[in-house]
Image (cartoon, rainbow, N blue to C red):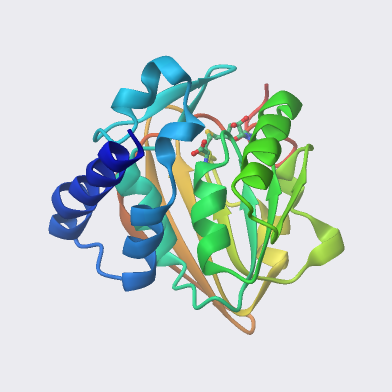
Length: 215
Ligand code: SAH
Protein backbone atom coordinates (compact mmCIF):
# COMPACT_ATOMS: atom_id res chain seq x y z
CA UNK A 1 0.00 0.00 0.00
CA UNK A 2 2.64 2.52 1.11
CA UNK A 3 4.77 1.34 -1.77
CA UNK A 4 1.89 2.02 -4.21
CA UNK A 5 1.51 5.53 -2.86
CA UNK A 6 5.23 6.12 -3.23
CA UNK A 7 4.93 5.14 -6.88
CA UNK A 8 1.88 7.41 -7.28
CA UNK A 9 3.92 10.32 -5.87
CA UNK A 10 6.83 9.61 -8.20
CA UNK A 11 4.41 9.61 -11.17
CA UNK A 12 2.83 12.84 -9.99
CA UNK A 13 6.26 14.49 -9.92
CA UNK A 14 7.23 13.10 -13.31
CA UNK A 15 3.97 13.74 -15.15
CA UNK A 16 2.39 16.77 -13.48
CA UNK A 17 5.24 18.83 -12.02
CA UNK A 18 8.46 18.53 -14.02
CA UNK A 19 6.84 18.99 -17.49
CA UNK A 20 5.12 22.18 -16.26
CA UNK A 21 8.29 23.83 -15.04
CA UNK A 22 8.73 22.80 -11.43
CA UNK A 23 12.52 22.50 -11.22
CA UNK A 24 13.44 23.37 -7.62
CA UNK A 25 14.96 20.12 -6.27
CA UNK A 26 13.81 20.88 -2.72
CA UNK A 27 10.21 21.30 -3.87
CA UNK A 28 10.31 18.14 -5.97
CA UNK A 29 11.76 16.16 -3.06
CA UNK A 30 9.14 17.47 -0.63
CA UNK A 31 6.38 16.51 -3.10
CA UNK A 32 7.96 13.04 -3.38
CA UNK A 33 8.01 12.67 0.37
CA UNK A 34 4.81 14.08 1.95
CA UNK A 35 2.03 11.41 2.04
CA UNK A 36 -0.75 13.47 0.43
CA UNK A 37 -3.23 10.56 0.65
CA UNK A 38 -3.28 10.92 4.46
CA UNK A 39 -4.59 14.49 4.17
CA UNK A 40 -7.86 13.56 2.46
CA UNK A 41 -10.75 11.37 3.60
CA UNK A 42 -10.02 7.67 3.32
CA UNK A 43 -12.59 7.26 0.54
CA UNK A 44 -10.64 9.77 -1.58
CA UNK A 45 -7.15 8.43 -0.83
CA UNK A 46 -6.98 6.69 -4.21
CA UNK A 47 -7.47 10.05 -5.93
CA UNK A 48 -5.02 11.98 -3.79
CA UNK A 49 -2.25 12.07 -6.41
CA UNK A 50 -4.51 12.97 -9.33
CA UNK A 51 -4.15 16.25 -11.20
CA UNK A 52 -6.99 18.15 -9.46
CA UNK A 53 -8.11 19.59 -6.12
CA UNK A 54 -10.24 17.53 -3.71
CA UNK A 55 -12.79 18.41 -1.01
CA UNK A 56 -11.59 18.43 2.61
CA UNK A 57 -14.92 19.27 4.32
CA UNK A 58 -16.34 22.60 5.53
CA UNK A 59 -16.70 23.57 1.82
CA UNK A 60 -12.92 23.87 1.49
CA UNK A 61 -10.46 22.09 -0.81
CA UNK A 62 -6.92 20.78 -0.90
CA UNK A 63 -5.18 22.40 -3.89
CA UNK A 64 -4.09 20.51 -6.99
CA UNK A 65 -0.52 19.15 -6.57
CA UNK A 66 0.83 21.38 -9.35
CA UNK A 67 -0.52 24.54 -7.69
CA UNK A 68 1.03 23.52 -4.35
CA UNK A 69 4.38 23.00 -6.08
CA UNK A 70 4.15 26.21 -8.14
CA UNK A 71 3.31 28.36 -5.09
CA UNK A 72 6.03 26.73 -3.00
CA UNK A 73 8.65 27.15 -5.72
CA UNK A 74 7.74 30.85 -5.99
CA UNK A 75 8.81 31.35 -2.36
CA UNK A 76 12.41 30.21 -3.14
CA UNK A 77 12.81 28.56 0.25
CA UNK A 78 16.30 27.56 1.42
CA UNK A 79 15.50 25.92 4.77
CA UNK A 80 16.30 29.00 6.83
CA UNK A 81 13.01 30.86 6.52
CA UNK A 82 10.40 31.89 8.98
CA UNK A 83 7.30 31.24 6.90
CA UNK A 84 3.69 32.34 7.44
CA UNK A 85 0.84 30.40 5.85
CA UNK A 86 -2.71 31.73 5.80
CA UNK A 87 -5.28 28.96 5.19
CA UNK A 88 -3.98 25.73 6.76
CA UNK A 89 -6.90 23.66 5.45
CA UNK A 90 -5.95 19.99 5.69
CA UNK A 91 -2.30 20.87 6.35
CA UNK A 92 -0.79 19.33 3.22
CA UNK A 93 0.73 22.58 1.97
CA UNK A 94 1.83 23.24 5.55
CA UNK A 95 3.84 19.99 5.56
CA UNK A 96 5.49 20.93 2.26
CA UNK A 97 6.42 24.33 3.71
CA UNK A 98 7.70 22.66 6.90
CA UNK A 99 10.06 20.50 4.81
CA UNK A 100 11.63 23.63 3.31
CA UNK A 101 11.49 26.27 6.09
CA UNK A 102 13.08 26.60 9.47
CA UNK A 103 9.76 27.39 11.11
CA UNK A 104 6.19 27.62 9.83
CA UNK A 105 3.41 29.68 11.41
CA UNK A 106 0.07 28.61 10.00
CA UNK A 107 -3.36 30.17 10.52
CA UNK A 108 -6.78 28.71 9.74
CA UNK A 109 -10.12 30.40 10.41
CA UNK A 110 -12.06 27.11 10.72
CA UNK A 111 -10.91 25.65 14.03
CA UNK A 112 -11.82 21.96 13.39
CA UNK A 113 -9.71 22.00 10.19
CA UNK A 114 -6.79 23.50 12.10
CA UNK A 115 -7.09 20.90 14.84
CA UNK A 116 -7.19 18.01 12.41
CA UNK A 117 -4.16 19.35 10.54
CA UNK A 118 -2.26 19.89 13.79
CA UNK A 119 -2.89 16.30 14.92
CA UNK A 120 -1.82 14.85 11.56
CA UNK A 121 1.37 16.91 11.34
CA UNK A 122 2.29 15.89 14.90
CA UNK A 123 1.75 12.26 13.94
CA UNK A 124 4.01 12.76 10.92
CA UNK A 125 6.63 14.29 13.22
CA UNK A 126 6.69 17.86 11.95
CA UNK A 127 8.02 19.71 14.98
CA UNK A 128 8.65 23.09 13.35
CA UNK A 129 5.03 24.18 12.82
CA UNK A 130 2.96 26.48 15.06
CA UNK A 131 -0.81 26.44 14.48
CA UNK A 132 -3.54 28.85 15.39
CA UNK A 133 -7.21 29.46 14.53
CA UNK A 134 -8.14 33.05 13.71
CA UNK A 135 -8.64 35.44 10.79
CA UNK A 136 -5.26 35.50 9.08
CA UNK A 137 -6.00 38.49 6.84
CA UNK A 138 -4.48 40.64 9.61
CA UNK A 139 -1.37 38.43 9.57
CA UNK A 140 0.23 37.13 12.75
CA UNK A 141 1.81 40.11 14.42
CA UNK A 142 3.48 38.21 17.28
CA UNK A 143 6.10 36.58 15.06
CA UNK A 144 6.65 39.12 12.27
CA UNK A 145 8.55 39.76 10.06
CA UNK A 146 8.30 36.70 7.82
CA UNK A 147 10.79 35.75 5.12
CA UNK A 148 8.01 34.03 3.18
CA UNK A 149 4.23 34.34 3.24
CA UNK A 150 1.82 32.04 1.45
CA UNK A 151 -1.92 32.70 1.24
CA UNK A 152 -3.92 29.69 0.04
CA UNK A 153 -7.30 31.40 -0.41
CA UNK A 154 -8.32 34.03 -2.97
CA UNK A 155 -8.56 37.74 -2.16
CA UNK A 156 -9.74 40.86 -4.01
CA UNK A 157 -6.61 42.75 -3.02
CA UNK A 158 -3.42 42.10 -1.05
CA UNK A 159 -4.16 42.51 2.67
CA UNK A 160 -1.99 45.43 3.83
CA UNK A 161 -1.02 43.78 7.17
CA UNK A 162 0.58 40.90 5.24
CA UNK A 163 2.70 43.34 3.21
CA UNK A 164 3.66 45.08 6.45
CA UNK A 165 4.75 41.78 8.02
CA UNK A 166 6.91 40.70 5.07
CA UNK A 167 10.64 40.97 5.82
CA UNK A 168 13.03 42.99 3.71
CA UNK A 169 14.02 40.58 0.92
CA UNK A 170 10.90 38.50 1.65
CA UNK A 171 8.62 36.75 -0.84
CA UNK A 172 4.85 36.39 -0.75
CA UNK A 173 2.48 34.40 -2.93
CA UNK A 174 -1.26 35.09 -2.98
CA UNK A 175 -4.17 34.52 -5.40
CA UNK A 176 -5.73 37.90 -6.29
CA UNK A 177 -8.86 38.44 -8.38
CA UNK A 178 -12.61 38.11 -8.00
CA UNK A 179 -14.56 35.27 -6.42
CA UNK A 180 -14.56 33.07 -9.52
CA UNK A 181 -10.97 33.34 -10.72
CA UNK A 182 -7.68 34.82 -9.63
CA UNK A 183 -4.08 35.37 -10.70
CA UNK A 184 -1.30 33.95 -8.59
CA UNK A 185 0.68 37.02 -7.59
CA UNK A 186 4.28 36.77 -6.44
CA UNK A 187 5.39 39.74 -4.37
CA UNK A 188 8.94 40.57 -3.44
CA UNK A 189 9.94 43.26 -1.05
CA UNK A 190 13.17 45.25 -1.21
CA UNK A 191 13.07 47.82 1.62
CA UNK A 192 10.12 50.05 0.72
CA UNK A 193 9.90 48.85 -2.84
CA UNK A 194 7.31 46.15 -3.51
CA UNK A 195 7.42 44.26 -6.78
CA UNK A 196 4.48 42.19 -8.14
CA UNK A 197 4.43 39.59 -10.85
CA UNK A 198 1.65 37.29 -12.08
CA UNK A 199 2.38 33.57 -12.35
CA UNK A 200 -0.89 32.81 -14.15
CA UNK A 201 -4.53 32.02 -13.50
CA UNK A 202 -5.94 29.90 -10.71
CA UNK A 203 -9.12 29.27 -8.75
CA UNK A 204 -9.22 29.27 -4.96
CA UNK A 205 -11.87 29.35 -2.25
CA UNK A 206 -12.48 32.77 -0.69
CA UNK A 207 -10.14 34.43 1.76
CA UNK A 208 -12.70 35.56 4.34
CA UNK A 209 -11.90 38.21 6.90
CA UNK A 210 -11.47 41.79 7.85
CA UNK A 211 -8.95 42.41 5.03
CA UNK A 212 -10.58 39.84 2.73
CA UNK A 213 -14.11 38.99 1.51
CA UNK A 214 -17.13 39.29 3.76
CA UNK A 215 -18.49 36.01 5.05
N1 SAH B 1 -3.56 24.86 1.77
C1 SAH B 1 -4.83 24.30 2.09
C2 SAH B 1 -5.90 25.04 1.31
C3 SAH B 1 -7.21 24.99 1.96
S1 SAH B 1 -8.44 25.97 1.16
C4 SAH B 1 -4.87 22.82 1.75
O1 SAH B 1 -4.12 22.40 0.87
O2 SAH B 1 -5.63 22.09 2.37
C5 SAH B 1 -8.17 27.54 1.91
C6 SAH B 1 -8.29 27.60 3.39
O3 SAH B 1 -8.19 28.96 3.78
C7 SAH B 1 -9.62 27.10 3.94
O4 SAH B 1 -9.37 26.08 4.86
C8 SAH B 1 -10.24 28.34 4.58
O5 SAH B 1 -11.00 28.06 5.73
C9 SAH B 1 -9.00 29.15 4.91
N2 SAH B 1 -9.25 30.58 5.10
C10 SAH B 1 -10.06 31.41 4.41
N3 SAH B 1 -9.99 32.67 4.88
C11 SAH B 1 -9.10 32.64 5.92
C12 SAH B 1 -8.59 33.62 6.83
N4 SAH B 1 -8.97 34.89 6.78
N5 SAH B 1 -7.70 33.23 7.76
C13 SAH B 1 -7.29 31.93 7.86
N6 SAH B 1 -7.73 30.97 7.02
C14 SAH B 1 -8.63 31.30 6.06
